Amino acid sequence: MCKGLAALPATCLKSAKDMKHRLGFLLQKPDSYAHSSSHGKKEKVAPAQRVGHEDVQQWADCLENLIHHNIGLAAFRAFLKSEYSEENIEFWASCEEYKKTKSPAELGPRARKIYEEFISEQATREVNLDSCTREVTSRNVLEPTLSCFDEAQRKIFILMEKDSYRRFLKSHFYLDLVSPSATTCGTESHKSTMSSTLTCTSPLVPQYA
Image (cartoon, rainbow, N blue to C red; front, side, top):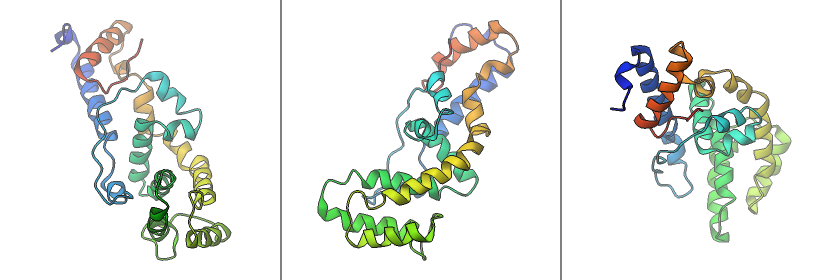
């Protein structure tokens, strides 16, 4: 146990434990995404990472900053899953992985998998695309290239940016990370002590000056 920990109020200790638990949860990718991996294998849980206060604040600047940060993407996924609408971010992430395909022989099978899961009329997790974009994408999949999902991915990104991203910034999934956990302790001295405590108890917790 860290020096000075015993002097902290019970509310501080509980807040620190809650933050550690929450960040640990956010780093875990949902099983649904793991099973939709292009390799068909369940992905391993990401290792412990640090997230700085500045990084968290930058997530509010634009959706791109959020979903191109590992922990930000995990937090956004968790939020969408709580709303039962994670298909949009899963489609976006699948497209990102698809564009990393190196073998031309793998383009067809991977493109069809994404199409059948997210775009076709019988898709298990159909995303909300206009008929024109859906038709163009359907034709692209017949002769797949690395860019065949670009327009559909762009449309879903815009949809998330205008809708779910704004709700995410007002949700506890974001606010609990952007606000120092020590706000429940009441004094500036407690904030300083809490920062030291969190450094010792969890490598996942953001560090504040």
